[in-house]
Amino acid sequence: MDWGNILGNAVGELISPTTAAYALAAIGLGVHFGYTGLLNFGQAAFMLIGAYGFAIPTISFGAPLPVAVLCALIASVLFALFLGIPTLRLRADYLAIVTIAAAEVVRYIVTTTGLTDVTGAANGLSGFKGTFAASNPIPDGTYGFGPFTYNAYDWWVRIVGWGLVILASVLVFLLMRSPWGRIVKGIREDEDAVRSLGKNVFSYKMQALVMGGVMGSIAGIVFILPRAVQPANYTTGLTFFIWTIMLLGGAATIFGPIVGSMIFWVVLSLTQGVLYGAIESGFLGFLSTTQAGQIRFMLVGIALMLLVIFRPQGIFGNKKELSFSV
Image (cartoon, rainbow, N blue to C red; front, side):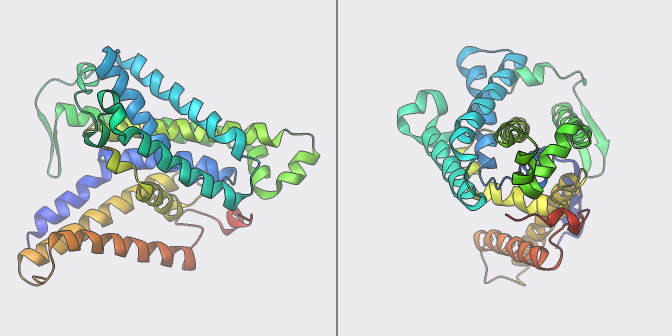
């Protein structure tokens, strides 16, 4: 096995745009679940809406970069309102069912053949990166060292992606130490007690849903900048990966989603590299690469089960943060 290549690919995942996108989505999910107690299993829908909300105006109308981003954010806010108004009064387990169903409904809508001219149906969309690439201030060329060697566009995507992760983390840090943050954490612990103090619990839940959903949509934009928009990427598995990342780092922590995303993608890349290398060397010749790809996800599932059993608060979490009931 080529251990140098395997380790290089794994280390490169530390700052990859995919890692940044998942970290952003996990930060948003942390606002939903970690701080407010909303059991949202539809974060993939917000990422999908962000991706299509950015790509469609760019391709169909030639929208400039700020307008395309604004369209994606407006679409995510409208979806959060549409999803939240009838559901945020539901009990946590019912909310989970509704959100995961809503995410699947949205995915099936964009794959319908009747919208092929707009969404590309099952083939997805491409050709939307021109405006973002045009904003790149880095001169053409290749920069970096070792596994961190990329061209100008790839560095620009990473700089923007991780810059957004830092901004989102700072925003959450400040908000959760404000009166607004104390109220949503109170709702997580006992919403009846917060309601008895005269606070509009539904309004605060809606604000948290919108905020976390917007972060998810921004994550969806970052996610597609290195690749095309493919509806197959937004299945329920995407939401479960985001949950794994959030729980790995800590549900109600600032740095947890970032470190959780890094660990998740480094381990996933390392596992894939080792399995593929073992197949090519004949050590696991009885397996195909397709089977190896499924095995690595099985290992992720086992790791998640062990995490929930032995350290449910995550790496940075505190058990006190898990005292609320879902």
